[in-house]
Image (tube, one colour):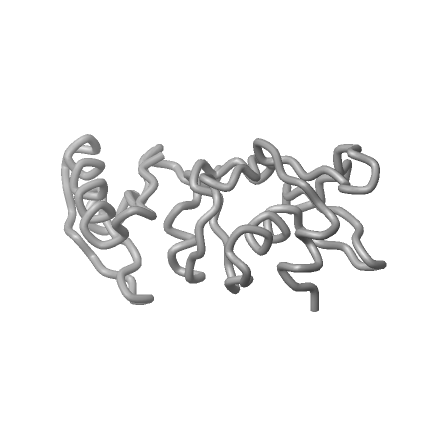
Length: 154
């Protein structure tokens, strides 16, 4: 397990990028299948955003959320600790979404737009609506209330 001292002695940080202290060269790394920058250090691969977080805060939370959802933006102000639920709340609209609105889906039985979202790991229902715009507004209000700073509306 690497420590804050390990990474601080090996790297410098500037604007979301790491540089090797011994050569001044920018840490290259590559982007993995999940879209995160990865680098090799002491014969092991590490996600660069985790190295940056450890460097400044001295510990590694189980999950680190990218505030702007850009997985290669490893600026310190773009990284925050998160629970698994909070990390999911900040996710972008899924490509399989058919309404174009997060938390809104078509309910065939009632022939209305339905608003649902996860609250404390329980799926909560917020109603059925004839109007998609109204359903989207209800979903936005619910996310703002229950997901707080992790609420992502698009």
